[in-house]
Length: 342
Image 1: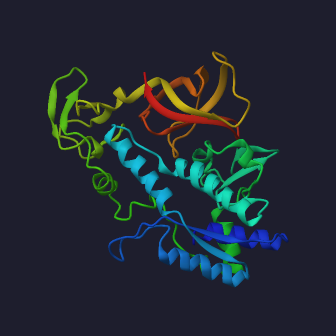
Image 2: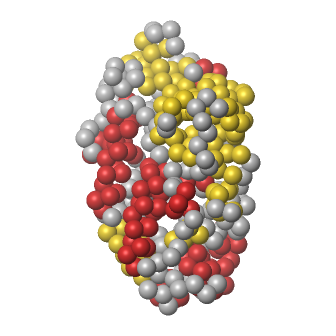
Image 3: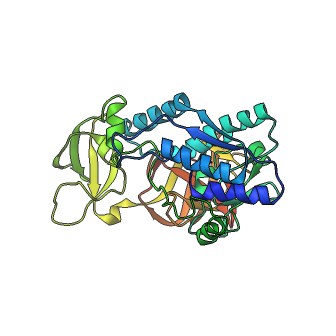
């Protein structure tokens, strides 16, 4: 229970279905420096979750995962220094919510783990939520198949409005609580503060055109991500970040058309189906960002844990460090971490 309306309604729904429910809040040990800087796992969120649990009459525990979250934050900062754009929510689900939380469930004798993710499990397979605007399966590709067999996603058939209505009908204090859309440990809204506090920013360097000509200088690659337009030199026409070289500090800028790629390369690939054999061509729809539409293509396993995706049409801003998630209709097949594109 995060203290938001989604997990509150999950607890409510499970209780109404007759389950014996225990609420767990995961403390990340991060706090804002002022009242305006708020973490989504803050003390006030713990209080909100506790109030809902009290309203429902269920046991509630706040568990300290500061060390585990610290490791996640260190990885986040290191990825920016490598010229990559990390997605910590995927790793949080993989290692914490569907890792450590399951071990806690075992310790207290809980049969199942339920979360407020908008997703569905159909016959043991992960599928997208009915509400496409709220679907969160992009962040869940790294969950172990065995964990899915013990997971409940009660919100998978609902819209956000329906969730709020259920909370209001039962008088839950979180019914109208605003959504937290930012990274939970970036309390100020500027991720660079986190990066620079965890080992310093990325290497300074030059802005280059595609032909290698120098367009300007910058004070650290951690300020940039592939596809970015803001914060770049005025060049007389819109330009975008196309590549980041962590070794030299060079950031290559191109007009928008220069962002298009037809192939991506991924590592750390995990499958939620039986893994295809090497060189088998697997038709799929692939998402390269959580809010991007999936694009038709072919996934080819190139080595254990590695794959190449060949798209049927060009895709913009394929970003190293982000996830590439493979779908067949509503089913999630698996995914991996983008290393590069061509």
